[in-house]
Image 1 (cartoon, rainbow, N blue to C red):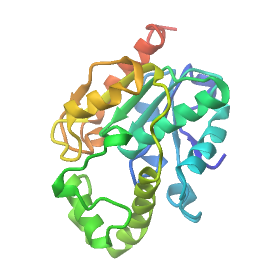
Image 2 (cartoon, one colour):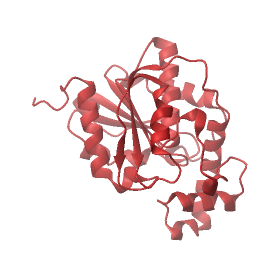
Image 3 (tube, rainbow, N blue to C red):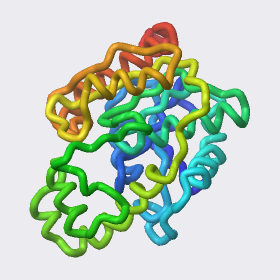
Length: 258
């Protein structure tokens, strides 16, 4: 399926880390992780239409349709254990995907990691970033990106970059805004919350409490140096945490010698 990008060799994988990118981002953000994580922990990622390898496709306009496509796409990797990882908007999509697969086939992930994200029902962006909505102007969205950090002033001054980035970002914001999150039971899997120490868009303690309602197995939150894009800023620490949490999810078998 076009939506699934597999960055590891499947025959070497004991367990999959399935990654969902932040708003406006693509699956290639996680490509290098395949060489940096322990052997046996394979890396795959999901790509929404309108970016990356799917740049020529129309943007997704429905959360229901997008998640249904993702659920179809990941079928080939579900034969092995899977831990979901979502960065920012990707965390919300991870929750929606886990719910869809539970509904379809009684499936659950070994664990879910929500990084740099408020829980979906209370993505209460602070006043300084209040213009982050799908009906915001291009200028307002560019200002919001600048406030989040992680995007250079040079890129934000580039018309070419903004012409590619902003439609994808606006579409992603619309997906989240139009989704319904109530009325479903919590996931029966460990749910880890990763936050950046200087993330202006996420209230760390509040996010941890909010995500706790979506799991029967709440885990202590982890804090990392950096802002909203600490996943890239503190990549070594994040990858070490992911390897530890994945290993715990499979009872310590992942990192044992072969």
